[in-house]
Image (cartoon, rainbow, N blue to C red; front, side, top):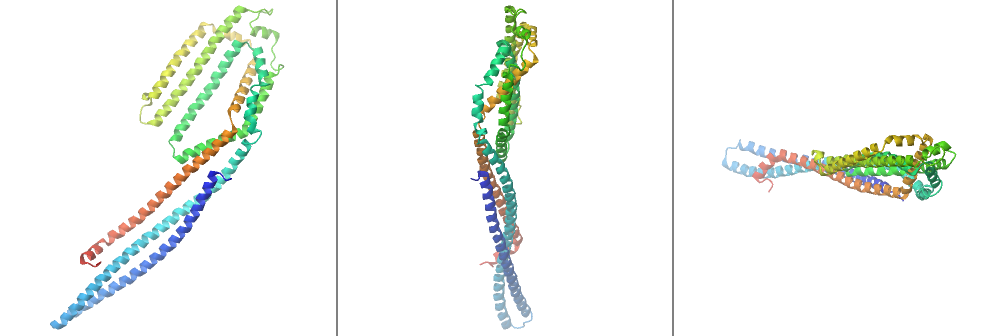
Amino acid sequence: MASPLLTYANNVLSAANTAKTAADAAVTAAKTNLKTAQTTLGQKTQDLAAALKVIADIRAQLALISTTDDGTALLTQLNAAIIDARAKQAAALAAEDAVAAATSQAAKASAVLGDIATRLAGANAALAQITTDEAARQVLRTAGGSPPLSTLKANATAALSAAPFTTADARLNTDLPVKLRGRADAGFDREATLVIKRQDVDNAAEAAIGNKLSAVEKQQRKLADAQARLSDYVLNARQRFDQAIVLLTRVADPSQGSLTSDEIKSIQSENPDGTPNAALKTARETVADAAKDVDAAQKTLDDDKAKVDIAILNALAADIDADPELDAGVIAARAAAAASTTNLTNKQNAYTAATPATLHAWEAAVPDATFQLLADFHTANQLLTKLSTDDPATLIANLDTAETDLVTALTAADKAARTLNRLREESAKDSSLAEAAANAAPRRTFSALRGDFE
């Protein structure tokens, strides 16, 4: 079944072809009418000239007569000739009006034909482009709606609760103490979330721009975005899933980045003989918790700063001439960021009091290879989590909705453009008639005074 956008493009082209046929006929008819009107005007002008000559001839005869009887007869003829000439004057003026009307109608018909020719060329070009674009979108729909992509969401969800994910997670819990891994996880989450928040601000900026665009431009952006998202999924989703499994398999492999006996003792806060060092363990865990609190506070502050940026964007979009710093939303966002800054300072002070050097020494005891395994686990977790929420069926539905909405916007815009063009064409015709009327006014008003039109 043809897409709404392709159907729309075909309908526009069909309508343009139909309109062109009608416009061609209108131009032909207008030219014929104009020629007829011009012929009639020529005849009426000749008739008027002949009538005026009769009057002139009679007046010449009157100048030569010497008797009253002869003059009376000529005066009677003159009166009849004047009445006839005035009637022919009215007919000539009516013929002039007809020519003016036919001229303006012919000009309008030609303008309409030109407009339709432009529409037709645009419709043909649009149909060609839409046909190409729709073929590409249909490839994406087919791929996204078929295995393996159609089942990838379920596969990713299942992978998050099965080996090698669970095996890799267990391996890291064995290699890293809970408190140390918790601090490392918090640091990773803080930085990963910062990227997301910056993207949120960028998305908000794009949305603010989109809201100021025309309806068609707005829907075109939405369609492009929906297509880009589905395209990214079709091209990369399976690869990301495979990448996650490869990373998890490596992390779960005990031969990868295995720790020596001495490294294990150092990391697990044990003495050289393998006995627990409770005091060291407590000190390490205390400062690790404090560092984790700093990470959480920094994450909150980053979030609040992003909200400030978004609030400023919203304020600018609402009124570019107003000071955004006086906007209630911006004021509230800055207040939240200020409170988060204070909270971060407090957490940093608590961390400093907990002796950061103790945590640094603990982290230094962990080889980079182990931290790399943890980083790979987080990367795989991010990939699978995203894949477990991304639904190709939803992406396809979003693409379909964006296409339908674009058709709605295009239909309204096309009608508005056709209305404007038609009004301009009518205005040009009316202006032409008004000019012709103004030019004929002195003669018409004089004829009207004499009663020529009655």
